[in-house]
Figure 1 (cartoon, rainbow, N blue to C red):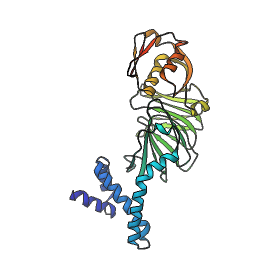
Figure 2 (cartoon, helix red, strand yellow):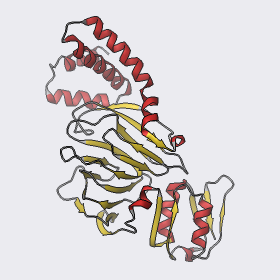
Figure 3 (cartoon, rainbow, N blue to C red):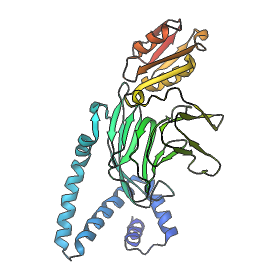
Length: 325
């Protein structure tokens, strides 16, 4: 522990070289207890710096005590301001801090909130810059209380529709498991669950760039309105998206246009956290066009599809399996 204490002293006294800082912060990012201690010292230092300009040590300490109390209440207060509807959909809200552009996003230490949306729910968030985010079921989303000086960065595992507040000087970046999406101000949808092979990004207004974080030069695609990009055979393929009705997307309506039942099932499994077991294989290739709300019960969705695609279905007693017969 003495070694860690010495490294903390060197870091916060400014006596570490940049390569030493990189090694130190990488180590911290992988060890929760060290990360917690780093955040604690950093917060104390930040508040002390604000007050020590006037040489008032007691004020600095009072400021730290007050800050600590506010921090304990902050997640609940922030939640009540940011969540406009479906408040019950919040399953997890945590505060954490990430370090270094090489490992995360920025050289600034930024606190991130995390929300997780349960099955059968959606969630509407308003971020600090005025950007709005509509999250689909089972999505996980990390966002800061306030953005850094150079970029507005968020992290998504799932599906979300973004209406980004325009700021030409500070690009908005959505990082997912497979690709990043960079915009200045526009409306678009990103679908990338870590548990799925599906990747889609669809653009409704403006312009966006989709790229691999570590290979932007050779894996970058620019989209214009009414275009979408999907991942196929490890390649990003552009096409015309199913529906360019932004109002439906903003209201949590999923649209399928001339899609096979097999493709639709892949998304239903994610939205409803259910496995599909198919015994009627001929039903998979039937083409379907329609729409449904994300909050609709699975029975309503399958019932609508049945009207044009003849099959029978049964749902297990624990609501985990759908049998297509």
